[in-house]
Image 1 (cartoon, rainbow over the protein chains, first blue to last red):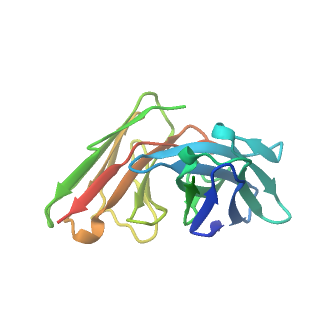
Image 2 (cartoon, rainbow over the protein chains, first blue to last red; image 1 turned 45 degrees about the vertical axis):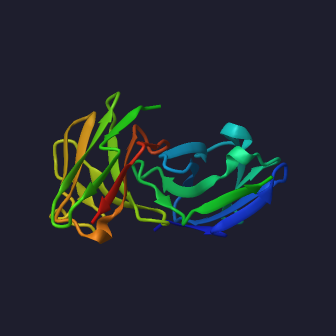
Image 3 (tube, one colour; image 1 turned 90 degrees about the vertical axis):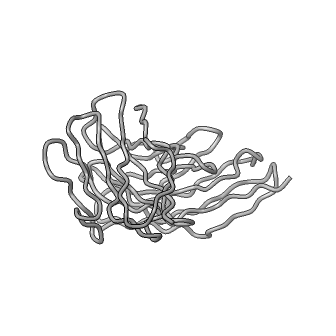
Length: 114
Length: 113
C-alpha cells in the first residue's frame, strides 16, 4: 500500500522568502513521486516528478524537490517566493505497477505575503 | 503531454437527477482515471476507465452511483447518478501513457441543490 502525508495544511511566507512544503510517503515498492499545483478554480498542473535517476529534481517556476529514500521524503522548495506562487500544492505517489494511478496527500495551501 | 477537455466545466443540478461528465483527449492514451475532490479536500480516485471493459472502482465507489464508459482510447464519461448535496465536488479526469506521467483536465465543478 502507498500513502502520502503533507505536513502543514497551510503555509504562509513573505515574498522573496524560502518556500518549503513537506511531503513524506510510504511505499512498499520503489515510488514515483509527483508535485502538482492547483490555482484557484483551475485544474492540476504538474510541477515536477521523480521516477528514477537523479534525486534532485527541478521543475517549472523555479521549484525543485529532492527524493530522500532514507527519510521517505520528497519536500518541495523554492528559493524565493513570488506572489503568483500562492496556490494549493499536492504531493502524490505512484509506482511502476500502478499504471498511472496516483495517491494524493492532503494538500498544502501556500500563501505569499507582500 | 496530452490536452484534456472536460465538459461541462461546471453545473448546478437538482438532487435526485444525474449528470454525465465527458473527458476528451487529443491523443490516444492507455490509462484514464476519474478523481473526486470534495470541497477543501484532496483528490480521491473513483475508478480506472478501461477501454472495452468495465471500469475498475476503488473502495467506497460503486458502479450504480458512478457509471463510467470508455468507448475508445480518447474518450470517457463519468455519470454521477441520483445526486445529493454530498456529491457536490470537483470531478477530474486524468490520463497517462505510462506509470510515470499523469495529466489532468480542468475539472467539472458540480453543485447539487
